[in-house]
Length: 447
Image (cartoon, rainbow, N blue to C red; front, side, top):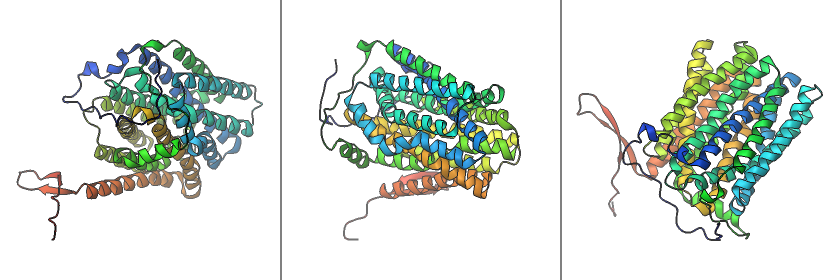
């Protein structure tokens, strides 16, 4: 059923362009595919429970050490394997059956999370064991991340790919905002061990759902044969395509500085507003509401462009700045909704344009680079922002987390405008002045 090839040709598949805005009934068009429905159910549970566990682990470490820096170290251990070994995971994903790879990694998660939950619930767990499990789960993510991203195309085919990518990215980031809300409530009521146990059960559900898929209905990607230079080939491919390169560049700034929200919300709940784990869950819920709105808006998009990605990255940074300056919990919650909306719009746009700009034969390696930047940035940003919070205060840390991606978005947008000979023109002839981006004419030779 699967064909093997060592070539990257044919050329990159064209990015689907919608001539008219999707009908509301087509907002979830890819869910008409049986295999993708199973996948969405399993990944919604898995992503939400995985973030529940991450937050439970972070809170558990904070209770044991009373150190935000230690919480940041935990984040680093969860994501550092992807940072250092991510590109090798992409090669494995391009070589092997992606569905079976995901079943193997989720089986490992079931065992690791179940063991840590048991230790925590009986009260014999220590920080060292938490660190070890966090690191091993990160190792599993090295393989699962690119396999999961590339597997989306195998389930829905090219026609529905853009819709499925949008939903897939929405599931991931919505879980990252909804999971902490649920976990905060569970931690406050019954303790961290139960949130970790829920993730073990979720991993088993994923294995079952993947096993129930109709293999004959998949659209298998061509597998590459083992050869030298495959990692270098993937890096060169990504660097040669501006839509991939600049999306990953801005993602590096957003993930390192802007996607450390759980670390900061722990401190806001504990020291600024003094609302404890329950307040932490409420704050995460507000961000989740915004994420849901952003997910719905992303499926209505007609085009995917670099300039819209830079716009939402900048707005995401501004939302973080405003949240860090919010004086009271009510205003804080409103701005958290804004964080959720802008984060989802940026994330779905960036992942869509990278996947849709990549040939299927090399997609695992390109998406491993994307995942390496996304998760590796959080690995570096966790301890960095934790240190900034302890040294200069959590409010200043939140503002800094927004300033950097906002400035990066402006800088990249200026580079893109210059390379594309674009300029900003103010049209004053109308009653209301309007701004327009226009292309400058090429200079005449000899002048």
